[in-house]
Image (cartoon, rainbow, N blue to C red):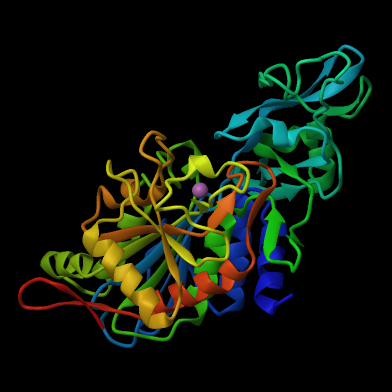
Length: 433
Ligand code: CO
């Protein structure tokens, strides 16, 4: 296995939930010499400086070139994945057993969560000294829960018409009726008193580690490939790209799976505020800031659907990406993807120059398909943009499949993207520099 793939597997394993993905991203930025800035404290920026800002489970990192940047080259991905969120009580006795009490987070394939080792991770907020509310990531790092199927003998139609009611079918078995409560186990794990846990956001996670699959290891099987594959490859590319006249920026957003309209989601003012603040601190006036924004570009990086081996009919025959076929550029007539003619051309041209193959995705015309954070982020900024991703199967399963060779393709494509600056000619055409 290549060093890149090992690093990807480590990133996934360290990121069972969105707050963990943010913490792992921050750890890697810190190891690369990036300095933390806080939204609640004034910033001092120096040319050539490397910085990151955290808001909840969202992270934005940027690097200043040695001179005032002409614009920003930005890649955004999301750190959250569909899962089952623990309710505030966390667990409850039910008949002969204790069950975890969960509700759905995002739109998952429910059946994939049955009959496999699960555990719990997320954040707790605990009472600290002097009125402080301290948040800490917590992860139970052992097999602890299971959502058992009903036996075929009791549900003879299970293979014909399966349906899963989250309130009934998807509540995990946790222990016997005298079992310790989830919050007692979490408090123990975190080394805090149970009564000091003021609140929590916890989710189930799949315990299966990432693995290579296929005759020659050509596929990756893992939880959370959507969207940790793009979160990881964009971070790698961001860290290794060479300096240009533009400012490279990396954004990891939260809550894409539930619509992005949250404090750390792409619908928030987080990215916009960071960009405005950078311009302000660097001494640009409002007009200079608007020129800066108009010479910026956002890549929304989120996985795409590969053509399915058993169900090719779900793909549009002319736009059916395959795994290991390179980076996918996504188009949608109704702008559910942000790519327009100019944005798609800029990104495809960068890939062509970097020698990275690209594929095109659009939905079969009678299948509505999904959306991404791209349009949401761009709807309140004047930047050019494209929606891209890597082809995968079983999106929103708790064990997804993608191409192992695509990881290197995406790192190369995004490194080339970050190594490009945008100029504008005297007729207003965007130019790659
Ligand atoms: Co996604």
